[in-house]
Image (tube, rainbow, N blue to C red):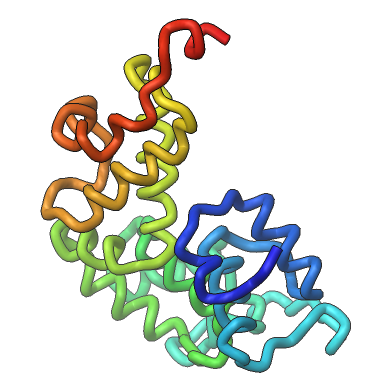
Length: 212
């Protein structure tokens, strides 16, 4: 499969991205967003460390956390010690890690050159404490956008009315593009079939074809 800028205009399953990463001797682990980032960097000609370019060392657990502790390659993790650190920092008896914090940590691991630290986790936690700010942060994140598309496809296939289309994933993609460009919630609802009837009418199959 040719890997160029047009490649990213189409939907690809995670397993497909993993196979392509292995083909180009890139790490094949991590989230789907991280896999996309590696392949995009490759197409852009950016230097990437491959599994054979250096020996991967397991980071030792952090002995003592501080605001300057790096999030990548330091052994930092969302464990009991980290929970205790944040509880003490925010002067609360219990502390719960948030999704924006998890997203930032994965971003730090995927892009260590950003040099993100515990201080950045504190900042993102404070900046996304209300639901509106949290939703905005997640909406602008590449990983969350991947989740939105996956949820959209799941809900599309769960609607029995979509069985009349072939190929169904193509129709889902057409509707997704319409939703992405609108101000409507980025989710599948049955009414989309009628709202964009003209755009997907060419993919309707006959009753005999549907039963096959």
